[in-house]
Length: 234
Ligand SMILES: [Zn+2]
Image (tube, rainbow, N blue to C red; front, side, top):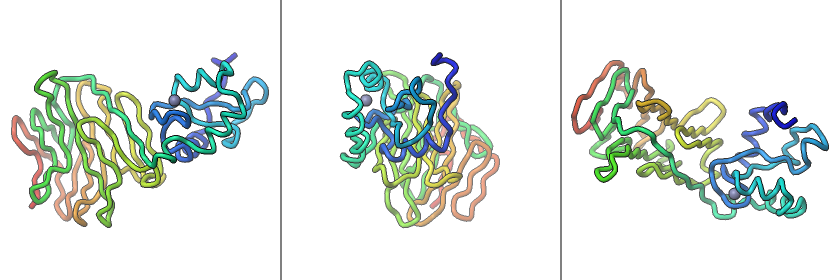
């Protein structure tokens, strides 16, 4: 009957992700599933108090009873990422095609996407050895604090710096509030789609595939073909 079970409501999922520090409560892995501590078969519920997030492997340990219900409660009370004050994970990229939809145009074979006062804050370059695409972003808030970093596809952030972090092998999204997307990266097709809104030294950077705003500069149609940098503001 598991196939007919409805999905947990988005609000419940977000609450569970946030309380867990955006990773498996047991091991911290950021690719997660939603576990019923009180099994769905016993009680058709979506009570956050009786649910938790786990990775596939730890979820299996709980469903077969290798991790008991009382131990599950202990794990839920002290999630690994909250204890460590760190969320880490990899963004897997399935393409070698370095083409980015950004600012109403395309950056083709152009590794530095946004450069501010000589600092590259967003880039997508090719790994010379394997040809894979490596994406980097330095996400700061208005006060200059680091919210999150994506360094050559490796995520790192403190769980309390963000409101929600959803990550899957080919797409990730960080939100600072319900409709406030700080960074979204999607590589599910052959091209990279990037969206974000953050600050660099007090200057707001706001970009999507259709446009970009850097401070007071609005960019709506920009193409870069085999350049070093797509968008540079000094
Ligand atoms: Zn786990």
